[in-house]
Amino acid sequence: MELEKITFEGVEQKRPMIIAGPCSAETEEQIMETARGLAAAGVKIFRAGVWKPRTKPGGFEGGGEACLEWLKRVKQELGMLTAVEVATEKHVKAALTAEVDILWIGARTAANPFAVQEIADALKGHDVTVLVKNPVNPDLELWIGALERINNAGIKRLGAIHRGFSEYEKSLYRNPPQWHIPIELRRRLPELPIFCDPSHMGGRRELIAPLSQEAMDLGFDGLMIEAHNCPDCAWSDKNQQVTPEALAVILDHLVIRETTQTTESLAELRREIDKLDNQLLALLSKRMRISHEIGQYKKEHNMPVLQAQRYDEILSLRGAQATELDLNPEFIITVLRAIHEESVHVQMKLINK
Ligand code: PEP
Ligand code: MN
Image 1 (cartoon, rainbow, N blue to C red):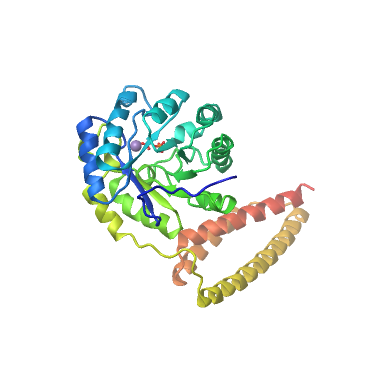
Image 2 (tube, rainbow, N blue to C red):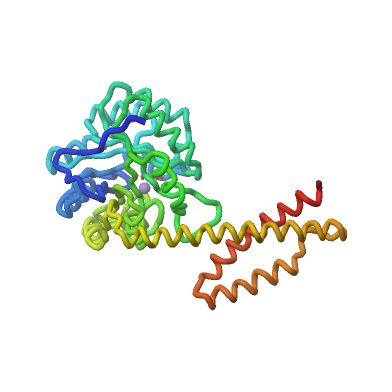
């Protein structure tokens, strides 16, 4: 992928790059009031959705093109850069005409290659920064595919926004982070800047600070956070927005650790970890060999592979042992489940041979 650094005049090159603003542009007053608060908090890039993709019809779907005039005011009067979500060719054209600085593709749109290609085609020949949110479903290839479509259209100032992935079961998060996915994205595209959106991930304002810190500890480049002059009166996503003042406090408390420094003692500890991982692998291989022998015995004696009582025993015994060893029993049970599943798989293959 051919990429260029995302830099803006007047925006200091430091981690994290902050994009903040309301979920939706509601009224001119709300936009100006929020933007003033954010500018005072030192935020340079203002976001607002003017076309809102809603799960169900009947919700507030955004004021549309007319609201772009308010973003122009934010640019002119406060000197901020602006960012807007686009989902169609029409949105791209309107946003570019209004001189919006950053266009982002939302999670629902990123999941649809037809829509992403339509946006990519509309972007051809334009010099603008584009951020692509992860698709709603946890599919890294689909996310990378969307980034490639935009990059192939000649957009080099490109970034990704991690906003978590939807899940059928309710959990602490609105969209659980599944951090391994953006970590793998970083491994695959090391030059691509990654932002975290803790608002849509957490769905609750109390989760913005801890999720932002996690993102910083994982080396993310920026944060996109929803902020509103009156979060409780917001027309969309009110539980996950904070006032500009609260945002300033959250940002102030973030601990930013250097990403590039590797000290000698860290290298020493890493060698230690490598050694232990080698031992773990050797042990696992030995355990699998024994499991294979047990499978052989079960086959000869016509016994079923799964011995549920034995499995139960292993789980409860090791769970208790984990606690004694200062290990999280849930974690140990997850590991043992995976090992047991593989053992059953190995024995099944053997018995059916
Ligand atoms: C938004 O940023 O307001 C939005 C709709 O987010 P997402 O696409 O991540 O759901
Ligand atoms: Mn929102």
